Amino acid sequence: MSPCSSQGPRSFEPGTSASQGFSSVFLSRQSRKSTSHAEDKESTMSDSEGYRNPTEVQMSQLVLPCHTNQRGELSGGQLLKWIDTTACLSAERHAGCPCVTASMDDIYFEHTISVGQVVNIKAKVNRAFNSSMEVGIQVASEDLCSEKHWSVCKALATFVAQRDLSKVKLKQITPQTEEEKTEHGVAAERRRMRLVYADTIKDLLANCVIQDDLESRDCSHMVPAEKTRVESVELVLPPHANHQGNTFGGQIMAWMENVATIAASRLCHAHPTLKAIEMFQFRGPSQVGDRLVLKAIVNNAFKHSMEVGVSVEAYRQEAETHRRHINSAFMTFVVLDSNDQPQLLPWIQPQPGDGERRYREASARRKIRLDRQYIVSYKQAELALSVSWDPSNQVYLSYNNVSCLKMLVAKDNWVLSSEVNQVRLYTLEDDKYLSFHLEMLVHVDAAHAFLLLSDLRRRPEWDKHYRSVELVQQVDEDDAIYHVISPPLSGDPKPQDFVILASRRKPCDNGDPYVVALRSVMLPTHPETPEYRRGETLCSGFCFWRQGDQMTKVSYYNQATSSFLNYVTTNVAGLSSEFYNTFKACEQFLLSNRNDLAPSLQTL
Ligand code: COA
Ligand code: ADP
Image (cartoon, rainbow, N blue to C red):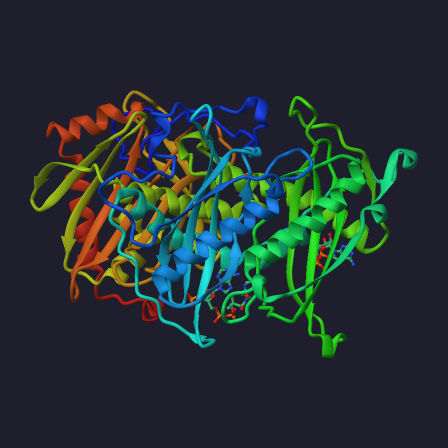
């Protein structure tokens, strides 16, 4: 199996010319793309007969004037409250006990929602871990007069189950549909990213060099950030909390959005619209009787958007000096004109010290957010094939690498094309790609097979399409970048080379496979050279499922493109046995090496 190839029929893995496709997720009302009633049946919350996820909870709300801002649009805070409540009820349906919001991933609002429209919210548990669950939420709006529907946003929240404030062991979710299987698989990877989020952002901020022009700017045209500072207090009352007295996460988010909106309004002297919320975490609980002090300020204003930061501290009346920092969030606002086009914003003059630090960090966060939004996007076909590897995107590229493979694995329209010597070849066609996977049972331990095949340096031992492999960078324990040289394709005098990110993941729980995901990246230290033809792979890799003692189902997946079609179809039609021979060589390699237990295997 060659790492991949862009043109020829020889190798296992294809190249693509996938175009880079990042488009802003925020659309003003003017540019809304509405869907017809018929087309959008799926995105409406109306339930068709048949299967329904047992954890699914739906909420529909008519937007009344009391829910709206001065623009007659549903306020972000109210929407966050409804999102959190729906998600919490879904989590509690699965857990069978009270749950608290631990975190909420980035939310990008695609549309505003007007008074008189209906908001439809649907939430379901994607995956349960130990005591925590990932809940996926879809928000759509509906115009009752025109019967049109719009997707407003998608959100992912993590809830933690608590029974009498003690730890709960949740039952696992068994996904049924392809969509559920995909979400279930990818949720493990998202959790991994979430748990290191705070450290990742801290590292990125520390290492991000921001070129700002603060000194050269004309101060007379700048608004001092100090003018936007807001401080507000809230008393947590019983209606703000669940029956255990814990403040609802959505209520806190709504209070935060309120102070952030005031800060944003002080900069632009207009009515701003919430565009995005950065992933945030509820660091600790607050209860009925607590006072919450919310502080907000505009950290930075860009051309058409601004970042407002909010921090929340809780204290009891009897111990005012003992304040607990329970939350911080960063929200992006825009100011829309009467045609719903974003208006130019004034520059901000930060305060020396913390103000200047936050100003620079807001710029860095903006870059990180754009990278993340682009790379983490589900639209892998639109993601440039070889994305440049740099410190600001490496966590997200690893995520993308693993999640693309997991999504391919979860597809439910794989067709068995042939079976030779107990090696099964499956194919899958969609509008852009022909994918295939090979599968066999091998008498070897799953963890061992995983270790042997995750080290690409050993691949030349069984795959003649890998002539030599150099480890370029060990990114962390589970991610590494390799430079691979492959023999030339027929008719081409030049050998091929590939720069491949290999991301390996152990199972998150029983039933999960071991995964080794492979994709091309661009590394500044390894540019294309005249000596080699640069090949690329979009999505390929191995999965290992334990099938009893010392028996493993080994699968190799590859998402092929049209340029690769000939090679795949030649194999599928039985005109070439190269797939089988290579995979059989892989089996032989695993069997021959099954006894040389690496010390690191003990920890798997
Ligand atoms: N994002 C997602 N999950 C998180 C998380 C985060 N930022 N922090 C912790 N978790 C998960 C852990 O992965 C773990 O999941 P698992 O049991 O499935 O493996 C679970 O939460 C418990 O983690 P643990 O380390 O034992 O607990 P903790 O001391 O970090 O507490 C909370 C986590 C969420 C319970 C705690 O921070 C809290 O009470 N926060 C406030 C919650 C709240 O009141 N929300 C409403 C608004 S105030
Ligand atoms: P950081 O200062 O690193 O950004 P914090 O959690 O302390 O992180 O604060 C989060 C955000 O809350 C800040 O970026 C800022 O926008 C806002 N904030 C914090 N403290 C204040 C304050 N005293 N007054 C106004 N806004 C504040």
